[in-house]
Image 1 (cartoon, rainbow, N blue to C red):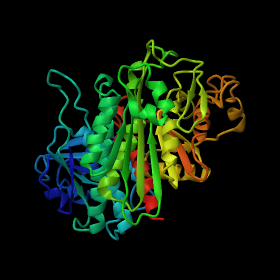
Image 2: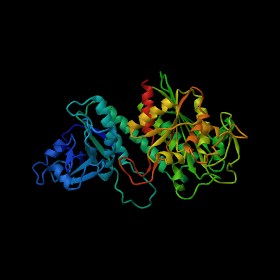
Image 3: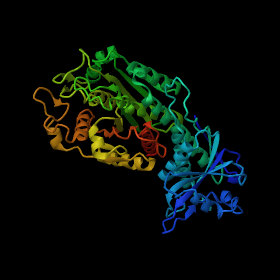
Length: 517
């Protein structure tokens, strides 16, 4: 994995393969380029060269300063590094430093563009160099570090022949005013940990579904949690039946690979708050008897993104040790078509005793999550965050990059704020009473979907169904990541093609925030 190091050496003297400086887009009517603070020493080394200096040379090479744009220039001995790369930071900010998300995207774009390099140095405006404040420095280091690690990510894949893709950057040096700063070192450690666990999330999501069926996924999760010194237990199909997890069992009936429920716990001494995490782990979703269209079904290998995210968050918690108790539940099943699969019209007794009429076997995520949420509430958490690729309605309403969040209004706002800080945007959505009324069943306590609305308000139907399993007094938030969990387009910023790892960084941000209460 790519490593991060803080340095405060003169950037022109750094012995790296490439030194990365920032440039701003000029908002005037001309095509000028503005060099961002931090790169002065590099720019000074080019002042005696023909062509009008570094900024003018970069402009002539086509640099515009657009966010994430990378322009490379051979140094020819002007600085110790053989290559200078200018990364766009967008328009010049009103303050001394760009927004954290701009730094994150720029660092990710630079790390990806410089793949094949053994080492690069990021010389970006992370803090006001005349009066660096710890809070400003921490935010800058976190953003640049996370962006670089996530931008450098590559999935190993399954090719039997060597790939033409260049290897990721092995080492990233982050230039700061004082490399000995305790705040800076702590920020770098946090970035390293979060970059690592997001990479683990992406690896799980990108794994071929024939290699990550529920028993295998549960084994890998249990091994990772045990290695991290977390408390872990796994319920197999017999234990699930004995303890009454009807929703998880119903969804798993159609597959030869039996379902699982993994519980992971972090219990630090003296913690006064308890957080529950629940993540959907459908390792592949055919839709069951209500089978999906063939087009794009292969992306359903990512239907376990929620489980991967909450497990990865637990791995970060184990390393960074916030003073709050955290317990995660990852229900895992494979929704397949067979003679034993559950059917529309079935009535399923859930873990909390509620009877559910099944109307659409492709609405399977809410079935396994209902069981897991009810079990998680038995731990009496103060806050419960549930993450799932639950509905296509989320993509229709909010697109591929913004998650929908439903639940306790105050907690939904906290999710939105944390997502804004981490670059994982989420938008609060309502839970209308009329949608719930349409889920009344003639034969059971609740229908799995609102049959009168069909797919109208589909995202809201999912959130309302899950609310039935949240214990009274528990603040909760359901985060629907159907769109943001998987990126099928070309890489950009720090987003790779494939699994994204959303919303691991948001979850950890919230856990840290709760620990500080």
